[in-house]
Length: 296
Image (cartoon, rainbow, N blue to C red; front, side, top):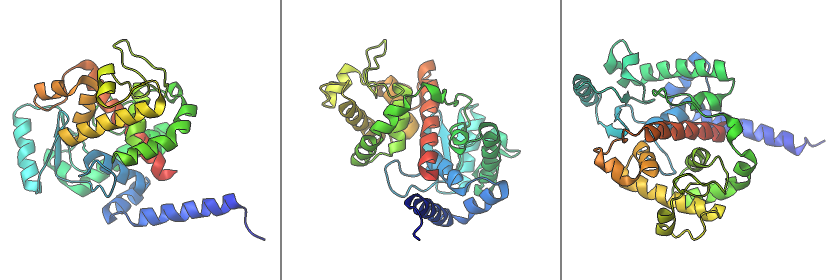
């Protein structure tokens, strides 16, 4: 007697997940086992925090990365990263995140220890486990994982999940076409419109990705309330911002506040309250959707 198809599917999914976990670097598997967290989730957190590439493909987390107010700086040695961190701390810079998981150096007894991959992962895994114990869900736990205090995902209830599932195939196709991750587009749409195609902001932004009329015209979107056209226009714009600014937080800041605002403030996240909250909010949803993709 042949097993039901759904049983075969579950077995294949389990095998695939096991193979993916086995392919992860030893440090992630070891630390994940020590703290009883999924190695895949720990690796996703590192990818979304410090990966060297923003387009689809093999994005490698980088241990000697410092982010200052949204601007990322990569160093080619631990010593160079440590010296840069000391310089920023000497200047009184507070908005710092560093290492594989982009943690706050102040969390470490010795701030430079944030660049030790094993210690960085252990501190991060412990935090991830704490979030899971509160949330009871790995995707939500990952969403809460960030050095900023402004990272809480809004209630899942405000999202139109029917539309999210309905548009998911189109989001995946458009994301691939523009060398973006579907999870990133899902994150932006979730924050911008909660998946409501008819959404209009007080400022006049329209549709799923809340395109301003001038932006819609710039990227060839004739009807911003047409869902697929809006997603494609928003994806084109986001891809351009990533190519220009070379940092996801800055690209998101520019999507919210405009490219000129990011330039005006020295290629850092502008000090606008809305933008300061917007960037970590989108990143939070980004982690949420990435973990959902990985765990199924």
